[in-house]
Image 1 (cartoon, rainbow, N blue to C red):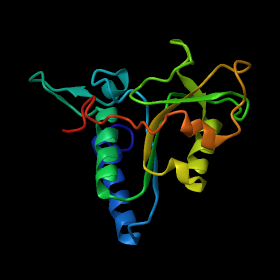
Image 2: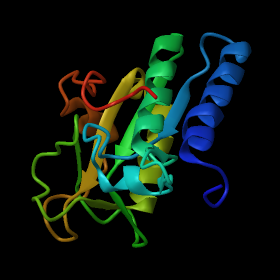
Image 3: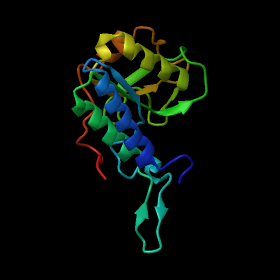
Length: 178
């Protein structure tokens, strides 16, 4: 199947197995997931990757964002401390030189409709900060960056998450089941 397993196997079953292993470690095990933006839109193009149309017209496979969200809901419902980060499109550019912007439900204010991306290094930094800063516990949010040279470079990661004013992603939006 689709290069190394279908999204259901990787993004749902694989994540579920990791969450179950974390539960065995103890209720204080903080689980951090790097997911993807777009989960509120069942018709998002990422859901088409790995999808196959069968001779009878039905489809199988694909639905990456659906399976990712299902795993996120499973994590949240597990009672474990969690952080779920939904980055925009990943850039192979240096991190630490842009203003980062957070939001929920596929909306991040101040990045412009044509700028839905973020350097991988910046995503990695936010994931690391989520393990260090208590303000990132039990949070689910979207992450993008402004174009280099716009705004102030993000250095205060507590202030970054505080911009959400306690909001988390709404998992009733989009599709989370099979």
